[in-house]
Length: 132
Image (cartoon, rainbow, N blue to C red; front, side, top):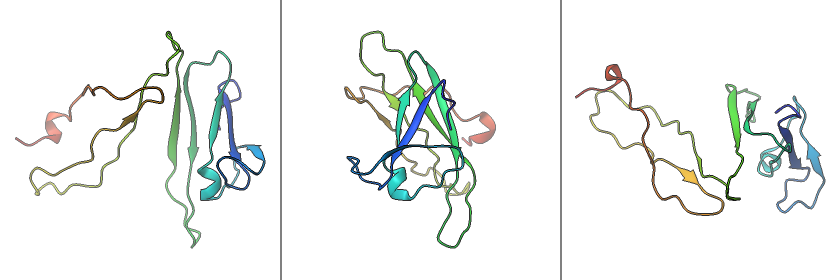
């Protein structure tokens, strides 16, 4: 879980939104249902700026445990009182290297107090990853 210096992660005990159960602080090792996970909230600590991060896994109905994934919550100070947009990390499905040009998922972002105007591609796959 993010250290308390970064903020507090909570969920609704009965998995409802808005919460009609108890707002519960999450501790490392807590097991939550998918409904409870859908009610996650993060309250950044006053003055914290940076990335609050935690790791998680999923367990299926047969008891199989997934890989470990990272969850990053960027916390920004706002100069003008507006929240900056947030871009989503995208993990595309595997592409066969003999398929030729293949459609991939679109870039994604959200803006809580506005709309996305444009995207800027900052890097490209390395030469060794591209075939011309």
